[in-house]
Amino acid sequence: MEPNPSPVSDKNNRSLLFLVGGVALFILILLIIIVAAKKRTPTQNTNTSQNPLPKTAITTKPMPTVVKTVPLSETSIGILSWLDSMKNSAGVYYGSYQCTAKTCEKPVVSYTAGIAAIWGEFQQFSKTKQSSLSQRILKDLATYNNKTSVPTLQNDFWHCKFLYDIASSATSTAEMKMAAKNLCDRAQYHPADVTDIAKLTVHTLNAPDVSSLLKKGVIMDSEITANSENFDRYSAYASDFIAKYLWTGDEQYRNTAYVYYRKAVQVYSTMKEKASVYSILLFANTSVDMYKTTKSDQYKQLALMLKTKYDQKACVRIEDCSMLAYLDNELYKVTQDQIYRTQAKTVIGGLANQIFDADTYSGELQGKKAYRSFTNDVSMYSTRMNGILLGLTAETIQ
Image 1 (cartoon, rainbow, N blue to C red):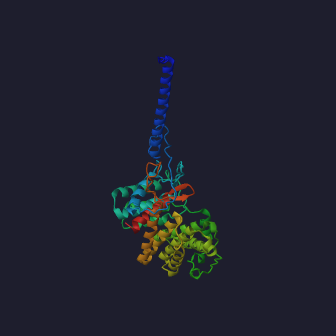
Image 2: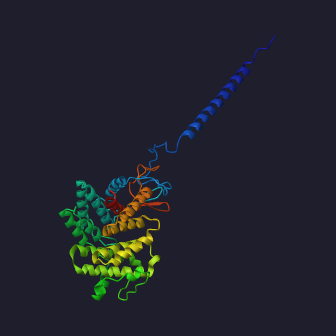
Image 3: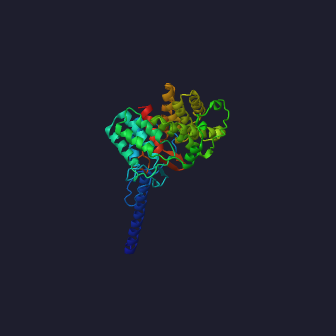
């Protein structure tokens, strides 16, 4: 006779079955979770409501290794929108916008960078004739003529040069011309330079002979005192006073321009290749302005020599490339040789494909739609450079 199974034994067997089944179910669920996690991409989880990013937080990417094609019409639309966002509550432009991989710095107002933005907007208006742009330009000019919004205008770059372009254009309205002239008159120049110029003799105010520079010689100007640290300022100020002379016909402005140019010539003569590419291309642009006012071919030849020498070097910085493209466009205007306009287009197109922030990056809501430069892991969006490139795009490509 078979013995009946013990009630205790049946209970133990059932417990063991439940335990094994539970472990198996746990393993199955764990496997399902692991497989699902592997299939999920890092960007699928977009719910940041529990831990939202700061409003200024973005993610940047390094310089692209694959060249993309960005339509230049897209860059113009993007820059116009971006520039409009680069103003404080009074309508004064910020100088730049800098971002790391995690955050962006709070921008700082610039009383000078906005002039390039206004110039770029005007060149775009000259092409499109959009009434909304006309009103925007007039509003910007009024803001910068308002001493409450912009107390001082201590120049550090082209000022009257940009404004003369606006006032002398056939597209400019009478209201624009008057506002541009008033804004030019607000410019302030470095006090030490103004003092030096007041002491110079009439003889010193002659335009310099730069023919020896064309032969790689050196010019020693005993009547001029120049500081190599001020090379860019000398070049920019010379162009500004040439613009003031062309605007008014006042010979004092022309003489002042000659002094600044002589200072710039002195610095270049002693530094040459030791100067930065940007400084040399800025000086070359000033030499074109000297040609415009004197009609002496030596200045145009000097600009051409400097361009030929330095456009063989790849543009590494946005500042260098902007000055090169501007120089190409100015040489086209004074020579009517289409090759220079073509070269300007090539430089601008290369910048658009390489450093125009047109994309939406991982972690960003949208691209900035503006040109940017890279330094280590920092992206910098410059109001001045974007204004210049906006204007050059309008003049040379659209």
